[in-house]
Amino acid sequence: MRSRQGLVYRIFVATPTGEQPENGWPVVYHTDGNTSFPVLIAAVEGQSRNDRPAIVVGIGYPETSAAARRQRRTFDLTTLADPQWLKNKARPFADLKTGGCDQFRSFLVHELKPEIEQRFPINKDRQTLFGHSFGGLFTLHTFLTHPDCFQTYIASSPSLWWNAGSLIEQERKFRERFADQELKVRLLLTVGEEEHSPPDKRDRQKPPAFRMTTELGNAQQVSERLQEAGVQGMQVEFRELLDAHHGSAELPAAALGMKFALSVPPAVTD
Image (tube, rainbow, N blue to C red):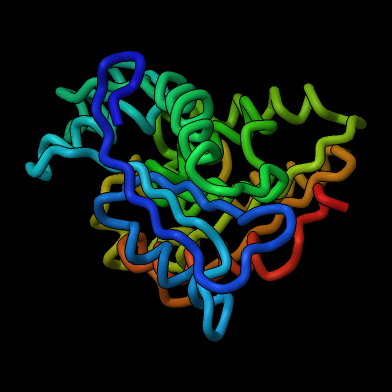
């Protein structure tokens, strides 16, 4: 699928099985479709013994080179990073273009979603966004800046360290914007135990900038502050995944996230 910006994406779609609900199918959109599509299919299928109870849509890239896909996902899923911070703290990304998350969100919401809704019967009140790592950063960024794009957000191991924790400032603005207001939206934050708890010997070898936390707050603290923000109708939950590190956390996060999104109708449809 070619975006209005001229960028080509590879879109993965798994259709449901079983009887179609009266109001249409729930739909799960997720980032990193090239690698995560089978994970999300399995997680969705895990919510029903015999059927796949939702449409799964993965957004990926046609490039066959892992390096080329890494360049594109880094741009699509990140906020604009300070060049000096990249050079000093995130050197592996210093030569990559960053800051395309708003353009990517626009493609997802204004181009891809209408195409999916034209091809399949979608329940527009049951739409979920899932992302892991940079995808989790993008998911949380979308929730904090444009929460009306989806009804449910699953941010798995969001890269809060990105750009010296600048996402925490977006969280503060979100709380100020919606304090004492009503916002019917759901958010699940998950982090592996080994990337959230105090660093063990192995984690100490990892540069501090790349742990899934920041001096300005970790995912649990973000969830607690959002829960205390006084936003009516909003549901925020946090789960630490036992014995999981950053690489292994996506599988249990997907299973837990799809249960959160699909096992019962979200409050927004009440």
